[in-house]
Image 1 (spheres, rainbow, N blue to C red):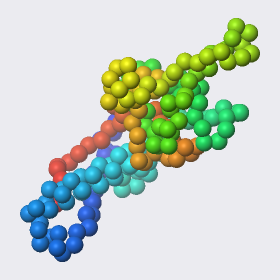
Image 2 (image 1 turned 90 degrees about the vertical axis):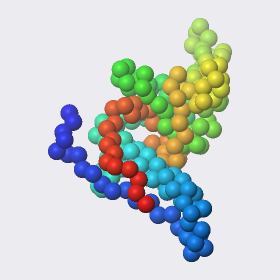
Image 3 (image 1 turned 60 degrees about the horizontal axis):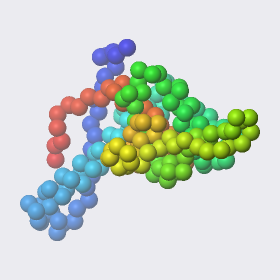
Length: 187
C-alpha cells in the first residue's frame, strides 16, 4: 500500500572536479561538466535504487523486505552460475511481474552466460546427452540490443555485487518501484 505520509524528498548532488583553467573556459566546458554531472547523478540514483539503505536515499531492492533469495545448488562450485539457478529465480517471481522483469548483473556474471545451458538427460536420467540454451546474446535471433536470459533483457549494472555474492544477479520488475522527481537539475 502506497502511503503519501512516508514520501520524503532528498537532494542528490554531484561534484565534478574542475581546475582553474577549465573554469576560465567555462563556456566551452559547460556541456562537458553537465555530461559528467549527469553521469554521476545517474549512477548515484541507480545505485540507491538497487542498494540504498533508506537513510537519506531510497530503500533499495537489495534491502527491501520483499527481497526473495535463491540459494545455490548443494554441489555447485563457488562463484559460478548454473541454468538451474536462473530457473529457480524465475520460478520465485510472480507470473504477473515476469513480463516487465529485467535481469541486473555484475559484468563478471555476464561472462558466465554464453556457456550456460540446461542439461538434457538420457531416458534413464543417468547421463547428460545435450543441453538447451537459456541465454541469447545481444543481436542473437531477435536482433535485440541487450542479451536475454529466459526471454528477459540482461542489463549490466555497476552497482551489482561480484560473482558469488548476494546481488550478483537480480531479477526485478522495476515497474513496481515508485520513484518521484521534483524539479530538474540545477547547477
